[in-house]
Length: 288
Ligand code: AMP
Ligand code: ZN
Ligand code: FE
Ligand code: FE
Image 1 (cartoon, helix red, strand yellow):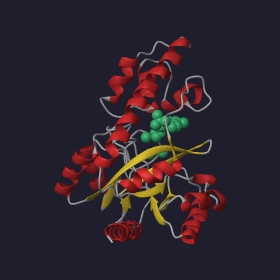
Image 2: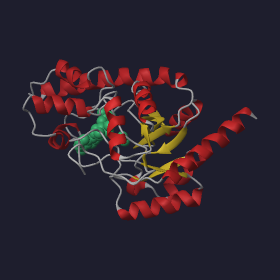
Image 3: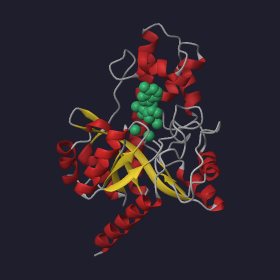
């Protein structure tokens, strides 16, 4: 990885999961696209949490640089008691997502306020204004709270912020408003997007996947920084078994935001091609 936080990839490779300042990434959309070009990526998907606000700038920059941007968004859902993240990739009708995403963002704002309240009751001098300062108008997430805590000198780094305060079960934790997974899949489909299970990890087993496929899941992330070699093998085999399209990406949040490098998952162009074929097939079926 270079200091700028990206790999140097062979021609044609893509990266289908990353974040910008539109949500909790550290770089503006144009800078993300620039980094992708420097890394040598042919295409990227911008998949900010609960917002499409970065897409226009990303597309404009990508047009100028000759790389492709796939329109995406990362949704938080629940599958029973378990949290599950869903990528809506290849969004064709963004307007149909806006009302729901606006609601999620306003819930995120309230949640951040409740988290700050909790931290204050624990004696930490952290203010909501500092969190807004970090978010800069983007969809607010726990990483923004973590950055405000670091700047205030309350924790050393985001790892400590999550481990001591913000992670599930910790004293500053508040759950997000989430859709039931079937509704999240439907929401993706309503916009003409593919519904992809993001970083499914060790929980991705045949028994867990089968009901999701029945609910319309189109694909799974096979390669993700959180996946061990055995996860990649197992999830790849399950994708074949269920006829799911493969996806993957670095979940990049910018240089210096964690160990992952842009392009580091080495996603082959054939995976994006398989997604394009499925999008085209589903669009044709919609018209028919
Ligand atoms: P939120 O959307 O507010 O629930 O925040 C989720 C985001 O927090 C993820 O996308 C990660 O970027 C980040 N995150 C989650 N867990 C950790 C952790 N243990 N350490 C650092 N960042 C984390
Ligand atoms: Zn994130
Ligand atoms: Fe996620
Ligand atoms: Fe992500």
